[in-house]
Length: 397
Ligand code: ATP
Ligand code: MG
Image (tube, rainbow, N blue to C red; front, top):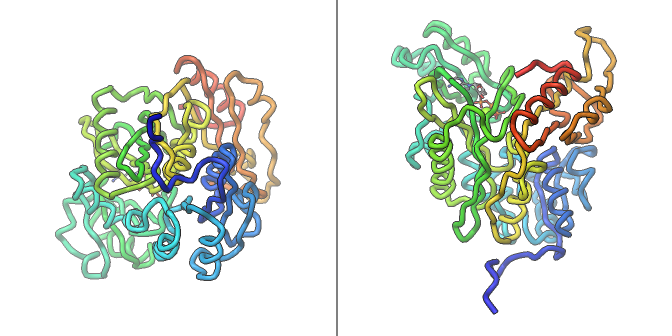
């Protein structure tokens, strides 16, 4: 009998409890994937009501860095992952001393800080935007920054969905823009001429095996992901291969174990430039739940549990629409009461897969769910997604 490709330390399906740091929607979808495979899941999350906490078998209600809670998590779980990159790296290290933890704390720490992240891109030979670190009034006033303008000033840490960013047109505007972001360490990036945005999700196992999802083409509105299309309609195969190779190279350079998403810009001249990376499943990979035979959450689970990583196969064309809280407020009035979108109309469309994250309150800009359309061909998926967008009052794409 041939040996199983699992490592000795694999936690087989149905055996034991897995842990997740964080209670958001990414954690919730991981919980679903893990439970489907027969695992129980414990979520560490301070909020009483959270998308992942509500789905988990056990909810440990405590701050992410509380030693007693981490100790309890390590005692209860055979392996632990995180659903967001701003978990204290020290918490991951503490857990890793006792249990299998993926992604590794060092890689998470790199992803927490835009300057470290760009240094990691450079070290792996992955091109990124010309940039400079701004961490003092002196650096903010430096004339040497002129070649980076017009630029985008981004806080080095804790930015997401376009928050913590400001466009800076001239050197004279820079000191005030830096102060307006709180005078915290920032990265000033040259504003690049984008043709389009794509992302690549790879998963790497402890044995170094790397698999990937197909390249995703992403449309952002107001700094927030709005639409993901797979197959990427405007990405030639050679460019897709290049992006996949770069993402794999990064995972290897970081000695990464788990799911890693790398966001790329495709410039007007066709060049590929890495924007940022996330040490976890990504919003642009949600379509994989419905359109692939192995989803990004299945990959996270497999990498965490030490199970074999198999290359996912896209079995349907997919278009994903993000469902932000704005959809619940069709009128502009600030004091308007939320109105539930017409899900019945949306679900009457062929190939609709509705995912709501169980958040009690809709707020503008808040990710409430997503809607994936699958079809045998890209044109049909897109046509149905456009019909749904019209029903929901979303802009066409
Ligand atoms: P996320 O939610 O993906 O973590 P974020 O807040 O970290 O978002 P970025 O990904 O850095 O923000 O930027 C958000 C969007 O702003 C990008 O997807 C892109 O559309 C635009 N953008 C960011 N940096 C640049 C740049 N250097 N040149 C041109 N456009 C940019
Ligand atoms: Mg981004």
